Image (cartoon, rainbow, N blue to C red; front, top):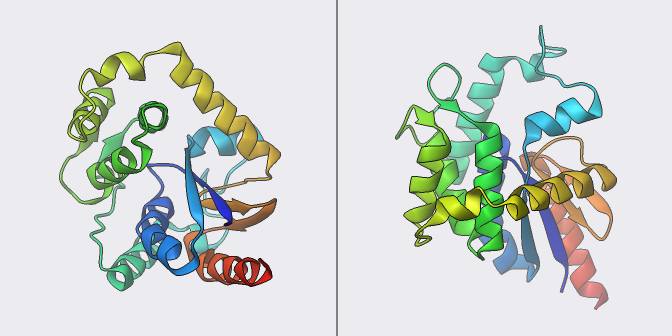
Length: 202
């Protein structure tokens, strides 16, 4: 059974879109998914650049195009999507730490989905540490703030960030299967094909 390392960031629209399809991917391929939250803004910064600074380097990164593209994918997937730019303020580091703390508690998928909803379904305009705690506790993790602030949570996040760099991850969402990297929501079809081929070999 193949394992997919899923590197994602809660504030990433394409991570949100891709995450919505993982149940189907697992059902269809028999693969397992290891959810590995990151702070994608730090990931880009630590690599020494990024496509979102200054003028767009291509039309693909223009905000109006990205919004329309995400809306089209969300319609295809049958999930809500409300543009975040100018509407919602979120703390990328708090989101990454919250998902990491939830991973330590065995609830990373449920909490990540709750956080994705907070950012992208239009239900709130501020996703700070307090809102992160509230969303995590709504998933059954009472007393969550202590886990969020525990030094081991930050240590685990840093470990995931370094592992992503070693794997060659340059953006999110990214999927790694035995060293093979697939980047982007639109590469899910290629990931699925790869997993199907691996399954035939076993």
